Every structure is written in structure tokens, then in C-alpha cells.
Amino acid sequence: MPATDPSTPPAIHVEGLGKTFRTWASPAQRLMVPLMIRVARALERVAPAVSARLRAGTRERMHVHEALHDVSFQLQPGEALGVIGLNGSGKSTLLQIIAGVLPPTAGQVQTHGRVAALLELGSGFNPDLTGRENIYINAAILGMDRAQTEANLPRIIEFADIGDYIDQPVKTYSSGMALRLAFSVQVHIDPDILIVDEALAVGDAAFQAKAMTRIQEILGRGTTLLFVGHDLNALRAFCQRAILLEQGRVVMLGEPGEVIEEYLFRVHAKASAQHGALPQRTARGFECEEGAVTAVLLQGAAEHAALQYDQPLRIDVELRLAASVTDAACIVDILDERGVPLSGRRIRIADAAQRPPLQRLSLTFRAQLAHGIYRVRVRLVQAPGHNLLHTRVLCRYDEGSSFEVVDQSHERFSGLFPLPCDVDPPA
Image (cartoon, rainbow, N blue to C red; front, side):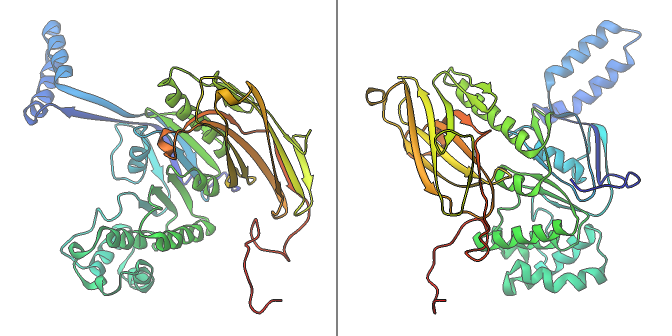
């Protein structure tokens, strides 16, 4: 987390934030319910029984959904905060309120600095105006004067990469072109606060790579980031803290790794409940009665190993599986220090007739990795076929097993691991 001056106000201050949505069965009920509420208030002292019946009638005519309840946090300048949670937990509503798109029902939000919000990209474009004209309008809405917009215009157009369409009406654009132009405007206003809601998957693969690079450049200048997304690896890479939302409430605020672990546990618990088996927490993750990883050892006996580059590393996994479990697999992943998966191996496990209740798997690979510390994560899954939507995680063993590559590899390769390639002419 960046060091902060106590006299500097937080970039984002959220206190007691709440948002309630009301829906009505028909337009007529929408008009009638506020009238009934006013009449009930007027009769509260002179005719309390009538007032109570009117209030009961209003509750029957409208549906109240509390999207957010008592959400509070602060985000310091230059800090990055990730927000995760299941669909419907209130993530997008929270970002829309902070961005000023929605008003809160309760609580307050304060922001200090220029805000760029990558929410529903392109939703503010006028389809009858050209892309160039929409750039000026959107930039003005975001707080840029005309001189600033004209200075940034060539970069915005070049980054969007939509060619001569920049002078065509936006209604002639494909959805991807409109998204790219909207993204380009937002990331070129030099924001103090960047709000991102599932907006890193715009355009094709080449544009996504360019978008990620641009966001990293913005963050490198000390911009504050509020990030919502299902890409947990991006959250680990960008954020210093994370919030877990559930049904509109903050259930955890802390380090990204801890919050992600809690989120995954809740996701797997929800999936396992459909099968009548709830996972149990352990010191190293979670397990269930149907399956568990009982031990992970490196080089035969240790939880941590120190290796030279290219030295063999053996990982022994001891596990148990109930006889009723079929289509099981053990997944061994290698993670970096921040928990981002680098690579791994999926090992199919024989069905009950061919396996003992307690069994051991061993795999050996050469530690062709850069100098640093790496973690070993083991998961036990039930995976019929290749459809990830049907995969059920029985056990997650994610703490305590690690290894270190002690020598430097700058002369061999850059990055974390070598890239096999042919060089012509050879060195």
C-alpha cells in the first residue's frame, strides 16, 4: 500500500452507503403507492388503524430490493482496491454510485480528483454524431476543456484504431468499434481515479493487450484504482486490497489473497450444497467428506525446498477419495509469490474399483524458473468431461508448500520461465 500523508484526503471515502430499488407491478401502482404513503403519514395520528392498513397496502403493491447495505471503506491516493462477489452481490451498483451515475439511498460518497469510469462503455455516445464529435462531448463531460481535448485527440484516435470511421456516425459502428473508442477516451483524460467494471475484455485480443498495457501505465503514474471483475489473476496483479461483497454487504476487507480464498470457499460451498455435501475449512484451505488432500511434500519430506535452476523437483501428494466419487482429478499448480498461476498439471485418478482409499501421487519437473519463491497449490476435483461448468472442487490445499530457485537466470531468459525458440544466427 502506498505511503500516505495524514493531511491528504482519501481519494474515495464511502460511509454507510445503501441503495434500495423499488419496482411496481404496473405504471398505475407506481403513481398510487407514493399517494398512499402520503395519506398514511397524514392519518398516522388521527386514524392510526387506517394509516397502518394503507402502509400494508403499499407493501403489497411494490417490491423492495436492497442492493447495498451499510458499505464503508476508504481508498487512499495511488492505492488499488478490488471488489469481488457473486453475480447480484451489488458490485456494479457500488461502482455506479461512486462514479456518480446512480444516487445513493443512504450514506455518502466523496471523491477527490478527476474520475474516469469504465462502466457501460459507449452508452453515452450520440449515434447520429461522428466518432470525432463524440470524443469532444465525452471529454467535456469528463472535465476536459477543448484545448486539452485537441491536444489528446491524435492519441485517442490512434489508440482506438478505427480508421476512417472516426468521421462517420457512431450508428454505423460495430459494437466493438464503439467500445474501443469509448475506452480510448476514458483512458486518455489522465484520471486521478480510475473505476473499472469488467471493461478489460473490450475488442479483440490485440486490443485487450494494448488496453492492459495502457491501464498499467496509468497506475504507474499513481492513479487510484477501483476494480471489479471476475478475473482473479488481474485482481491479484493490480490491487493491494480487496473487498468481498455478498448480498450488498461487505463480508471481508483485507489482502487480495485472503479475500479471494474466502470468495472461492463460498463459491465452492454453494456448488457443493446442491450435492448435499458442504466443504469444511482447514488451515490450508478446505475439504469435504468425499475427498481431501492430506499431505503435500517436496523432495520427499519437506514443505519448502531450495533449488538450483533446472534442478529436478519432486512433489508428493497424499489424498483420500470416497468410493462414490467418479471422474476425479488432482490438479497441481505452480503459483508466483502473489498467487498468480504460472502452470500446472491435471492428473486423472482411477475410479473406485482400481484405487485404494488413501493413495499417493508423485510428479517431477525441472525447476526452469527465474530466481524467486513459488507456491504449490493442489486441488481435488470431480470433473466429468471437459466442461468447466460441470467441475466441482472437492478440496483445495493452498498454503504451506513452496520452493525457491536460488540462482539468477538473467543470461538465460527474461521473465519467469524460458521460452524455447530457435535463434538465427545462433550465438
